[in-house]
Image 1 (cartoon, rainbow, N blue to C red):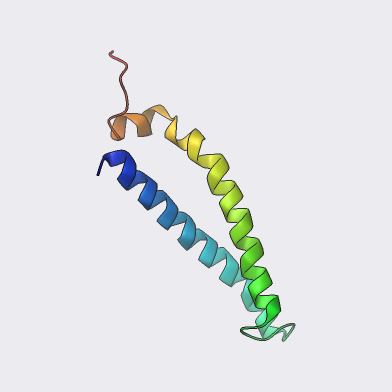
Image 2 (tube, rainbow, N blue to C red; image 1 turned 180 degrees about the vertical axis):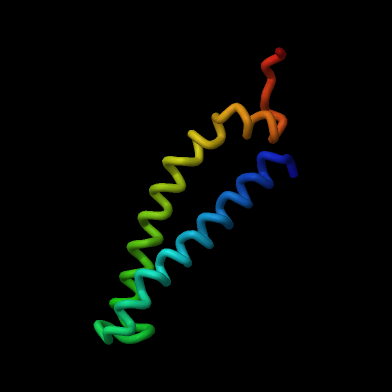
Length: 82
């Protein structure tokens, strides 16, 4: 596996953690206020919507992050000689 592959795996793992954390932070007040119950359609909808937003953000940020000079250099993708 290349450094770029490992970066891709780490990137997805980080976004899964971000999604889970944000989804849980949004979910907690709904559960505490008894707006919906654990395991209900409301909870599924909350996590589905946060997942959808996370996927969109991760997809938009990945090319920009990969094109940064510092990251390209760290992954060994920097072919430009100084």
